[in-house]
Amino acid sequence: MTGRFITFEGIDGCGKTTHARTLVERLNREGTKAVLLREPGGTAIGERVRAILLDKAHMDMAAEAELLLFTAARAQIVREVVRPALAAGTVVVLDRFTDSSEAYQGYGRGLDLEAVRQVNRFATGGLRPDLTLFLDLDEAEAAERMGVRPGASDRLDDEGASFMKRVREGYRKLAMDDPERFRVVPASGSIEEVDARIDAALKEVLP
Ligand code: TMP
Image (cartoon, rainbow, N blue to C red):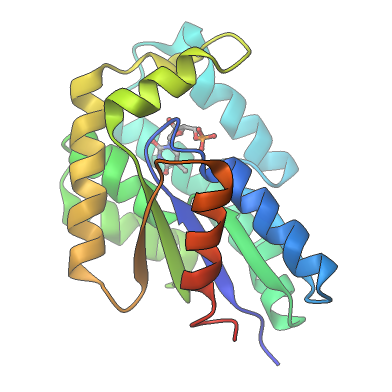
């Protein structure tokens, strides 16, 4: 049996990392083999690429270079981890995937969307998630949550509110264009409330 491929998406501070972790822990507790991976990263090569992307010394990074670095890390994780895990019947939960490219580099930075899609198709070999959970949170609320998040900011944390607004709008368009794959999960409220919404959305692909 082939595993299911589930991705989490959303703007910075929407809480998806916490919810993705809770979901994988629950699946494993219930006897469903599941792994949690993150983008960019998840492989030795990907973690090195992540460090380049987040480094504050790289404030002058071209949007095109940014896209290619994210997709380089993606190409590696797909071949090294995601495809083998799916082939072994594991549920793969990935914290960000190709929709992040479209939302951040496409809608956020203004790169040509068709070019962003082409590069991603090449990087992933056309792999598509079975389900994408878009955790939708108002950018002001997300910024507020990030303000209390421990740890220093990195290059990508320093984007302005208008950038994050474009990214959020981008996600909403992507979700509207592909309602089969996307579920829009309101990410405001308590952690338990959002987890319950995620579980309900998941029942459709993991009955
Ligand atoms: P994270 O906050 O989920 O760890 O992601 C790190 C940052 O990288 C976040 O600001 C979103 C950004 N990003 C992109 O801009 N494009 C991408 O393709 C990915 C995977 C992440």
